[in-house]
Image (cartoon, rainbow, N blue to C red; front, top):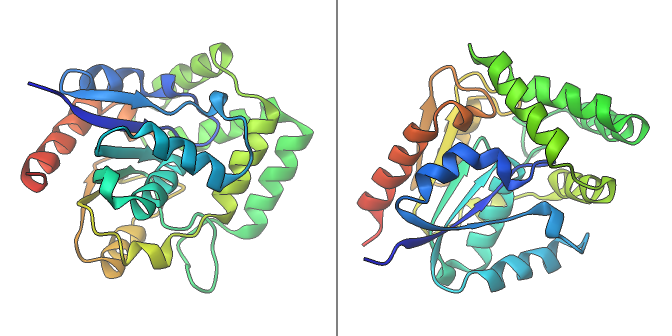
Length: 242
């Protein structure tokens, strides 16, 4: 039996190796295509989305974490004919706070983060890693894994800058109301970047969105919950894709 195609898109500053454990599980049942920021040769978001669209040879399940979730949602919105389903992990329609969206990070915090990245890349990434692993009882383990990934798989400063700008500018609020493909949004209960209020707000934007919250989950809840993530994805696809 042919495996269902699935595209997996990582979050800002991470290569696909962050999904090492999750990919092991997904490969058992899906034909997985990994999006690698290191392969990006453009800082133009539209051009990048066209590259991903061309990689979708068949209708696929599109899965994205954090910034990858925004990219996945944009992709599903632009080409629903190539999207069997959309699954986002620890993601939000708009990362920054605004009058339109109160549940993002403060603009001042984000702009300071951008400046700090320019001044001291390593220190800023270390602080970011600490932030995204907070909230889980095994934070030290997650942090050790992530810093190991960074030492072995680093991204260029230019890539970090351009993709961070995408995180700042992508706004999917209006498009979320029109996404027609089956959509599952996964969240971590203790995620310090994506507050749980986003769950209700997503469902207000589109009542067809299914949601699930991982107890004690951080922003990187999939590190400790690879098997559970697979189960939720399989269950959702089984119930929503003919």
